[in-house]
Amino acid sequence: MARSTVAQWAEEALPAMTADLRALVGLETPSHDKALLDAGLDAIHRWLADRLGTPGELHRHDGGRHGDALEVTYPGTTRGVVLLLCHYDTVWPRGTLAEWPFEVTGTRATGPGAFDMKLGLVQAVWGLRCVRELGLPVPTVTLLLTGDEEIGSPVGRPHVERLSDGALATLVFEASLDGALKTGRKGVGLFDVTMRGVEAHAGLEPDAGVSAIHELAALVPRIAGLADPAAGTTVNVGLIAGGTGRNVVAGEATCGIDVRVATPEEAARIDAAFAALAPADPRARVTVHSEWNRPPMMPNPASQRLFKLAHGVAADLGLTLGEVSVGGASDANFVSALGRPVLDGLGALGAGAHARHEHVLLDHVPVRTALLAGLLTALA
Ligand SMILES: [Zn+2]
Figure 1 (cartoon, rainbow, N blue to C red):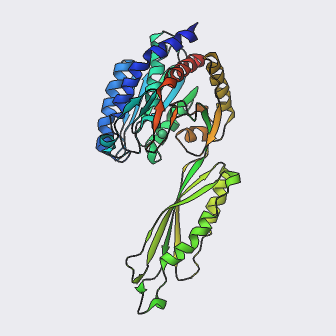
Figure 2 (figure 1 turned 60 degrees about the vertical axis):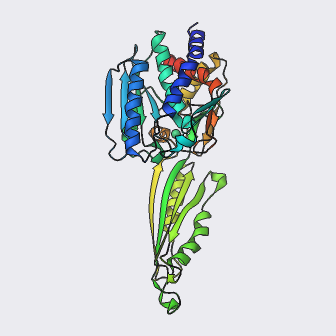
Figure 3 (figure 1 turned 120 degrees about the vertical axis):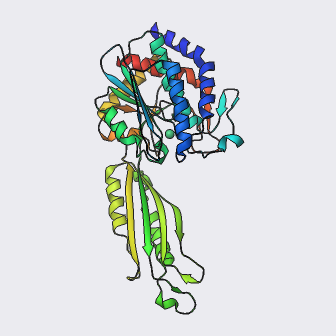
């Protein structure tokens, strides 16, 4: 009885939810623009209060030069806490909206950040609103909105780890992959390899110099060769720079690498391989700066039980819920690595994250909202 009521409620909410999506996409919130992030979060804060009422608790955590994190808690009717996790920053720079405004064509809506992940934020808020308005049992819900997810969550991470501790579930509203939830995500390593050579005049005394560019270039194929597709490991040398002039033997060169791994074992292999990098000319020196930005997310037993619960709730809504492992990382990786129950991909259906064809499919919004409402009630 309750489930069909939930589905109907969510169906009727679609026009208002679409209007909310338009408003949120209309707030430009690039990860690197503190002024826009602050103004965006102010507006989101007002919107939250309007849609959900005054929270039991509210904390706005200072993000310094990054986006602040907003933590709001709505007391439940039963024991336990569920954490809903969203980020409000996007990869799109200031001004993108002027050339690419929010637009609805049929059931498809497009606009910067709509898919990743402003629709997820709308669904999280309306899913909670649904159970509250219908008076269904619900655990205490904490919503955490972070403003630095797209740059690795230096501000958000401690809050994600603190609030997921002891939670019945952490539900992450990153986009879905064709409806499936994301129960596996790769870990991401950020590596910088810097080569220092010896500068010299390229014509007068080339032998006195050691080219940092030549030395670094020789290492690039070795770095790229660390990829192991069968093991799920990818390696991309995505940045390279160096030298000061055409007629100068380069004194310094550097490259930036993105590594993705599916297992901790592969992360260890990559670390060892980078540590062993050496230049051919002993006068050159190589240094490696590495940072594992997020650990790999592998399904843990607590998350597998949570997925089964979600699968059952979805089945009641006439939905067959799948699960997938993907290459992109999210804040769910932090929660999973601690062995805590987490589900990701509860957000939008659509495609084109971080790309110009970014769009969402509005006809899936009601059932995804109902799925969250049903899941919250099932956790109560
Ligand atoms: Zn995202």
